Image 1 (cartoon, rainbow, N blue to C red):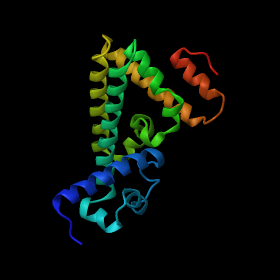
Image 2: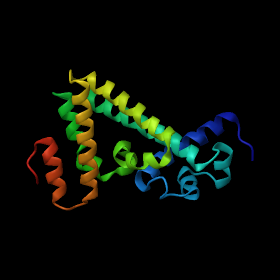
Image 3: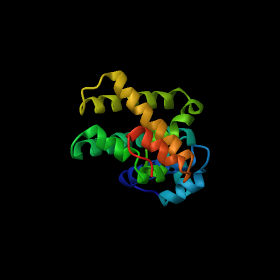
Image 4: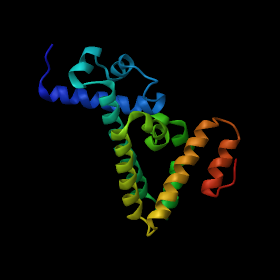
Length: 183
């Protein structure tokens, strides 16, 4: 059945959104086209009408996930009571963010896979990091190096907190970055 251009665009957006979530949850190679399309509510055949390959979808989904990062970061920073960067740090290392990989930070979930995806994906990450640095500089007069250190520290802490699961070490990792006492 043929679909009109508007429906095709909505379908494509639905697949990209589903892929952005599932790739963060399972990795690029941990989920197949069938599962991606099922999550998007479409058939496998629809995939091949929209994308040249899984690699092209992975690149588009990565770009989408990294944009979702910036939108979430901006939202937290703009709505912060008190110090924006402190509120951001607390949100970023919250139990909810740690638990929900699929809707969480793509830096933490996909960065280790970027080198295997090639230059285009690496360029997307570089571009997203630059935009994130610009965003942070709007809320605090940190130097570029300080902003980059903050991103690296938070992404590393999130990655390690997720890696240890429910081990008590998780609260120590979070506390080391947020200066809060471990639970």
